[in-house]
Structures are given as structure tokens and as C-alpha cells.
Length: 156
Length: 139
Image (cartoon, rainbow over all chains, first blue to last red; front, side, top):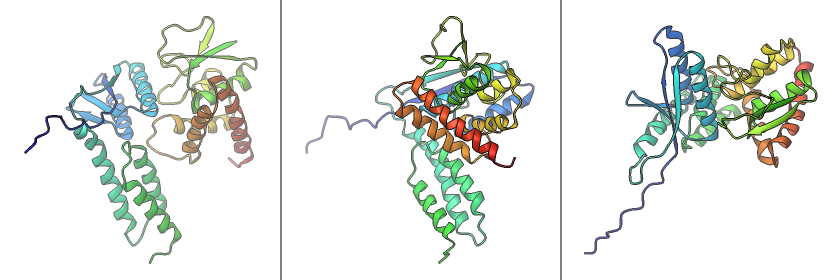
């Protein structure tokens, strides 16, 4: 039996942005403010140490502004461009972005199957989830379809 | 007067340039630098650059900062600032349906323009139109 000595092709690597910051514990409003913005962006906190986002023009702008805001409130912040060393896999990291997004899409699909549907509310939630859908989940189109057919009010 | 900002202009900077020409400095001349450039052109006022006097403040866009810094009191401009805030910054609630569309149109304008200068010029039309329509709507 012939075993191939060549390694399997490495998964394509992603470019990431890292945010490292420190704000004073008091007043707590500043800390909460930064934390909420990071959650809203869908950033992932790795090992209680560093906040990660996929590198896109949009995430770059948001991280840069957030870093400037942290400095404005008397804290310290640095935004880093980063990439794993060749051979290392960022699949697990990608999953940390994909899983919460897909869970949110699934809960929207479930919500759309209810008897009394708040379509306006669900479509707004869809818009918000879509903003954090950095890896283009296949569920996005499903939710969109479900929203559109619910809009038609056909309700088969 | 000369004004300088980062290249690759989008929603907030197009709006700022429109506002500067309209209400602050009709003869404004705009210059562009690469993000993070350490030296600014001499005598030029930087805007929408992190750390500048005219940039984001407390989570609001630079357009909003311009309104405060130059004491521009106009409810239509305030309304516009709310829309640009939502288009350009991370907000927890979304109450301006125009915002995501405006963001995309401005990004697209930059994509279809040969340079930042042209993109700013084209952006003027968008903001002129937006202002006129907001002014025509009941508050």
C-alpha cells in the first residue's frame, strides 16, 4: 500500500484582528460600554485575554474606533493584525464565530414557525445576526426565505 | 483652508466633507493620507482620524462632532447625524432604516470613483439629496 508522504493541503488561513485593552475597573460604565460594543460586533474573547474578529475593512474601522474610544476614557488599547503560523489550523476559532451565528439563525427559524409571529421584530434580529455572520452561513438564505414567505402571509 | 483625512472615504467622511463645504468652509480643499501615517500635511485640519480633535467622540460619528465643535444648530443636520451614527458606529439599537443603505451606497461610491477626491464630490450629491428629503418630511 502506498502512503502519501505529502501533507494534506493546509486549510486556507484567515487574517484576524486582535484587540488587547485595559480600562480602569471604576467607573464600571466604561467597562460595560466596551464589552457591549464587542459583543455587538460579534467579537470572540479568547482565553479571557484577547478579543478577535476576522479582518475586514469594516471590522478594522470598528476596532480602530473602539481602541480610540478606550484611550479617550483613559484606558490603553492596541489593535493587531494577525495570522496563525503556517501549519496551524484556525478551524476551531472559525467555529467560535460560526456556532453562535448559526444558533441565532436557528432560533429565528424556530420563531418564524410560531403561531403569532412578530415579523418586524424577527426581521430586525435577522439584520443584526447578519452583521455578525462573518463566515457566510448557509442558514442566512434560509432565514431570508422564511421571512419573505411569512411576509406573503400565505401561511400554508 | 485645507482639511485632511484618511484615504478610502466612506459614509462618515463623505458626510463631513459635505458639511464642511456647506456650513464651515465653502472653499475647503481636501487632502488624503494613508491610515496611520504619522505626519500630517502642514496647516491642514485633520478630521475623522483617531485622536484628532474632529473625530469620533463617546461613540458618536465625526459628523456629530463637527456639529458640536462648530455649534451648527439645525434639526435636519441633527437627524442626519443620528443616521450617520447608526451607519458608521456600533449601536445597540437600530432605529434608522436608512443607515445600512447609506453605508453601502457610500462604500459603493468609493468603489466606482477613480480616487477619494472624486468620491467626496459624488458623495455631495447623496447628502444634498438626503438633506432635502429629510427637510421635506415632517419631523
